Structures are given as C-alpha cells and as structure tokens.
Length: 412
Image (cartoon, rainbow, N blue to C red; front, side, top):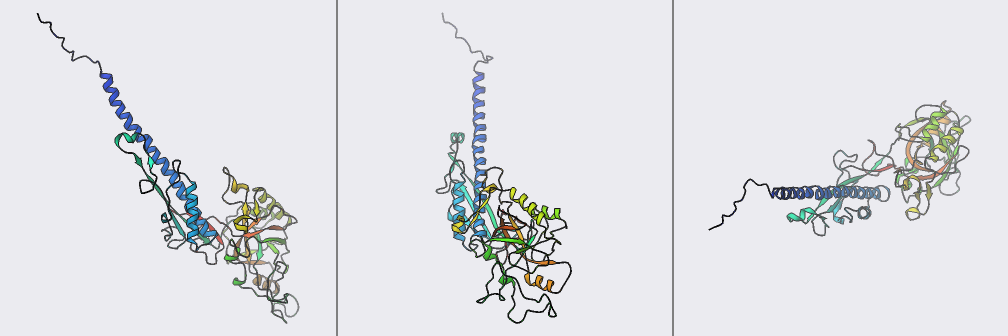
C-alpha cells in the first residue's frame, strides 16, 4: 500500500524573512555605495577646491609682491602650495600645464588684463591622475572615481585705499641746495625752493639752484616693493609743527575726516573708511598732537605686539614675521601694524607756506605702506617702509604701473 507524500503548504510563511533580508541587503548596499562613495567624492571635491584656491592665491602673491612679469616663479609658487594641500590624504595631481595666465574674467576688478593666474587641481582618472578610491561601488565594477577644481586669483594694484593713518609725510625730492656733489636726498634734508620771508617771499630761491620735486623723483612703486631701494628702509617720523619748513623726516598730523584729538587717536588705532589717494587734500591739525599720537600708536601696536620685522626674510630683504600672521587659529591675513600712510607734495606745501596763507593743507600724491615698530616715544613714529597690502576695492585692478597699493583676491 503506497504511503501518500505530504503536500507543501502553500500558505506557509516559512523563509519569508530571508527574502526580505536579501532585498534589504541589496538596498542597503546600494544606499551605502551612494552615501559613502559619493561622500568621499564630495569631501575630496571640497579639499581639491581648497588646494586650487590656495595655489592660485600663492601665484597671485608672487605676481603682486615679487615680480609681476615672472610667470615661471608664480607657477612654481602655485605648484608648491598645491602639493601641500592634500586631497583625500594624497597630494593632488597638478602639473605646470595646469597653471595658466589667462585674461582676467568678466566682473573682476582687472577685467581683460593679464594680472590673473588660474590653477586646475585634479584627482581623477587621467594619466597619472591618482584617482579616488571606491568602496561599495566595487560591487558593481566601479573601482575608482575622480574630482577636479579650478580657481582664478588676481594681483590687484591701485593708488587709493581706506584705513589710512593720520600722519602725512613729504615725498622725496631732488636735493640741490645743501649738497656739494650730485643731488641726493637724505632724511635730514630740508625742502628749499621758495623764499619764506622778506620782500621776495614766495619767489624761487636765488642764487643757486633750488630743490625740485616731481612725481618721478619721489617714492615709486618699484622703490617700495620687495627689493626696491626704499623697501625695508627704517625711518623715524618726527612730530612737526604745522608751520614748519618741510623736512624729510617730519610728518604732519592731518584730519582724515573730523577734527579733534580723540578722532585723530581713533584713526590711528582703528580703520577710518574714508578713501584717500592722489588728489586728496587733507587739513593739517592745528597742534602737534603728541598725546593723541602716543595713545593711538600704543593701542595699534598692542593689537599685534608679537609681530616683528625680520631683516633675514625674503632673501635678506626683510619682512614681517610672527604675531597674528603666524597663528593657525584666530590669526590675521595682515598685521594691523602694517598700515597705509599718505605722502604729500612738498613743492605745493612749501609754496603755500611761502604765500603766507592761513589754515595749512597737504596735497596727497601717493600712499605707501609702513610697518610700525614696537618702540615709539615722544609723539614720533618709527617703522619700516614697504608696500601696503590693501584689501580689494572698486579702485583696484589692472597692472602695476605707478600704483602703490597691492593686494590679491580670488575672482573665480
């Protein structure tokens, strides 16, 4: 007698969980591939952009502060900085061909000029490109992925800026009156061109050849730039009376906006947003402002007291080191002690005082950078002449020319 075989119970739910787990595992793997591998790509993309930004700025700094025409030096600076900014734990793939000098893009301060540098950064599948790894995507045959980033930075040049400090110095001139040899300016010279007293007051000094001034005889963009004859020149600016004869080492306290000792002191210690540049006429303060100068300078120096001028930097040409510029957190791009000071026309001032006019003014012809020394006394101002790395504004762009205000900025 045959034994009947058991029939499967088609209504049984045994094994259903395994099916659900299998389907869930497939979904989980797909989701993990999306989250983890896609996350790696976007994290690396952000790191690549940081590398491109840093490299472009390094190249622009070389153009702005070292040699505007030396593209190879700017390229090497960009390559070195790009290599220091890792992308997913490895140096990005950047070659010399990835660093170019195109016309500045539309909307940038120096649109269509040749003051821009562009850097492309890669970690992808091009030859030697060191592509990014994948983890879960390997299950579907995808073994690698890639990212790229690009950045364009511009070397900015201008002649006007804000945050100008309220002590004006005379521009350099051709010294003729006191030199036995060829005309040569020094910081102890006096500008002597117009008779200040007597019946010939206001007339050219005779006999002899009076001192002469022109824009070409003063500080120049080349002389105050790195390696120039005035770069790193240590000078003491002596506090002068508003009616004194023009001396190379004297400065005049001037009004940037409103009069008053407190306003004057605040303009030293902080930033006044008034834009100052060639053609600006500033009123000379009625007094010497010794106390407000000392108060303002002390407050300014205290903002970055650990910074110093190191004559060994930049191949022995000097530069600012330490202080907030060397801090990794809470630092600064530019030391607050690196300031802009106005330079006035000594000829115009000498002519004005000779004419016996009333209230004194100075005509600004240029702006130079000045790094404040920590040691100050008696209302005098001591420091080093340098370029002034202003923040970009609408008046900046183009190429160096006769511009004294230098900066860099990412423009794309």
